[in-house]
Structures are given as structure tokens and as C-alpha cells.
Image 1 (cartoon, rainbow, N blue to C red):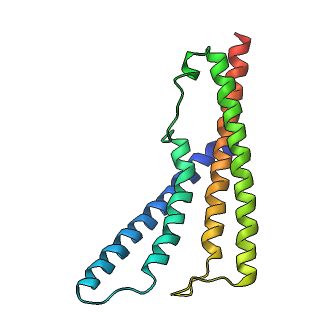
Image 2 (image 1 turned 90 degrees about the horizontal axis):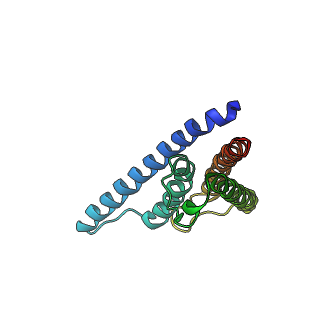
Length: 164
């Protein structure tokens, strides 16, 4: 097993903790804003901050969700295949998904660099947007790595089943 294969799940778990922290911040900010509205006051930019934190939650939880197999899988058809065919389908699926998230990572990086160059900020509180898009790229890149590890595992399983 490659060293990176051993480290990816730990990195994904740390990213998931960042997602959890962002989710807690979203809850606290929303609660505080609602409470302040009772006193005819509010926190400026709550809506845009919640949106940016939502991007952090979604992207940083991707890798860990995949490591833990927490995503929805519709495999009622694949379960009827032989173990060798299941491993092959798993390998192909992981490779295609890794390629897709690799492209999303690349395009997110290009978009973040463009936002940085243009100095794009949120309308109300003037927060720069590019760090959050870099975060999306990081989360998608981590998922692409997790999927590549899944691809390698499925490929090894296919190879081992083919030999037996």
C-alpha cells in the first residue's frame, strides 16, 4: 500500500472537522441573527456568510463521506454481478468519478484565481470570495484523491479475483 493511500483517510477526517466547525458557525450565526431580529436588529451580511460557509461544509465533507461510504449508492444491479465484475465496475466508477472531480478541482482553481485577480468580494460585508472557491477546489481535490485510492483498491481486488 502506498504511503499516500494510508494518509488520505486521515486528511479527509481533518477536512471533515473543518466542515463540522463551519456548520457550527452557520448555526450560531443564524441563531444569533434570529435572536437579534427579535430586538429589531440583525447581523449585516448573514445571508452571504451562511452561503460561503455552506460551500465550506459541502466541499470539505466530500472526501470523508466517500472514505466512510456515506454516500448514496444504487447498486442493486451490480450486486447481482460476480465479485470480479463488481470489482471492475467499482474500479471504472471510481476512475470516472476521480476524473470528474479532478476537472472540477482544476476549474475551481482557475475560477478562484480569476476572482482573486478581479478582487471580487461579497456585496454587503465585502468579504473576498476567492478563499472559499479555493476551499471548494481543495475539497474536490481531496475527493479526487480518495476516489483514486478507491480505484486502486478495486483494481487490486479485480486482479486478485482474476488470479483465483
